[in-house]
Image (tube, rainbow over all chains, first blue to last red; front, side, top):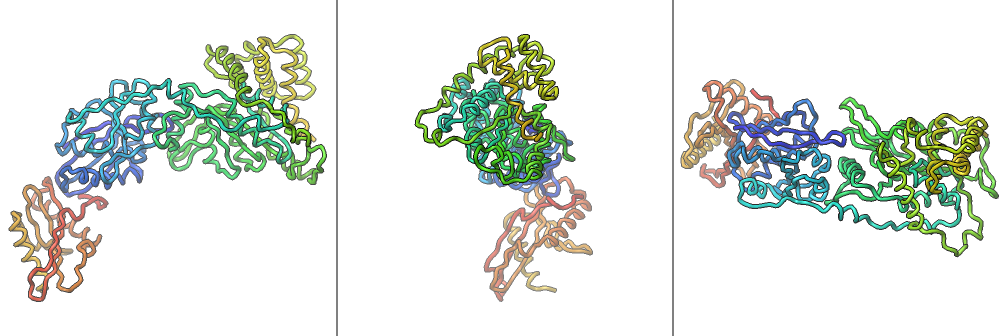
Length: 509
Length: 124
């Protein structure tokens, strides 16, 4: 007898339909799964049979053939267990085929028949049509109900599902209050008032946060670069519903949504160690998993000790930083993941770290310094909008009892500026100045005459590239927004230019 | 002839008859092996391997029917089904394990239904 159950799989961050076809027949007993199953999928056989027997359904020897259609797509993971079990029981006559109409089933089975949670439920939920019922493990409910208008049924065990489909028990659709879920963002514990002095660094960070610009901090060791970077999330806005869905999808595919979490609300802050591999940063590996740049999508990617990263890893960052997405191509297939993030980098000016220190002497030789700085190539530096020096505090500043501004005060200003940008860019659909495409630049970045003259002077005197020209205008746009001015003026331009002069100072020594 | 083995097969046969199984064939032999008992349990054809021991140690049935033996039994079963034209019927592989005393009476018996299947072996 033949049975068909609908399920979903994922490729990248999208869900796709999979039809689980089960044929139970006479002949030599055995369990055969076809349709390019991976190892976890093939092991379904053992889990499903134990689950069926331990749920007290009759099970004797027979030949079971399971086809996971379409046949040319790789099927990964254990999420088809529940659909396969349902198919077997229907093919054996425990359930009627018409009871399986318009339902989509995903879930892993334990040997005792209980249903276990699956990774990547959110993209699957988003691919289920509104007319169908989505049957999922109970521990995935909070994630799935974040999709509006998705009819979700939560299941704990196999015989519960059979009873429900037979009509013996009633189960309600699970719905979540998305508005209240969005307002539940946790409080941040790190505060900007912990960082003393370095007002210009804090200002630069505020500019970076307002327009989502990439920022590089250079300075001697122990002066607060890492501390400053860790406090950036505290002054950012929370994600919108659409942004939260996108980021949650990526984290879900990577298996990072645990313990029945629903949505990721705070912008991701990914801090990576310089020993990270290519696949770890950009994505890839056996299952074409998203990398750190995709996990940082809509958030921040923090690279501490930038020159310690291997050069090819840094070069690999160039394209995603520019395009906001990454296409991973392997023999097994190709997949595109989004990767729009704010890049925050920190580094020392030389191997010993004290090149720019006002009092301590640098022990490095010039070729050593050159080699160190050459690790950061021109093209990568070019793509960083803001470069600042973090200088050591004087003793008086260290012991100054006066309180610096707190994160919540800075955050208020950042939110105001971000709101301005959101309203302005509504017609072209981008969230911030950093993502302004070249074709719209002239329309939205209008300069006063003096500002134009100053910018022209800077470009010719400092020999800045075309990309640098665009970046300066974007940063100046953010600074003007913070100043509540529509037209970009000379003070905005000169501040923006000051954020790009460091690469001239150090790199062209 | 192995008398212990034969004794075991006779005891197994009478046990199956008591349970209502219909004995179809005994000692189905081909050049490369033998199936001890072929019986019918309602609508299912059972290919039964009988293992008899007289020593104290009761060897677990699974240990004595290893992969090589399983492959042989499956191949034999396939041949038998094809010869009889019964490929469409449901079938299963059982193991009956017996521990006998010196006088050939039963100390312990175990009948494992559906002891192994054909997943992992090439299909006819």
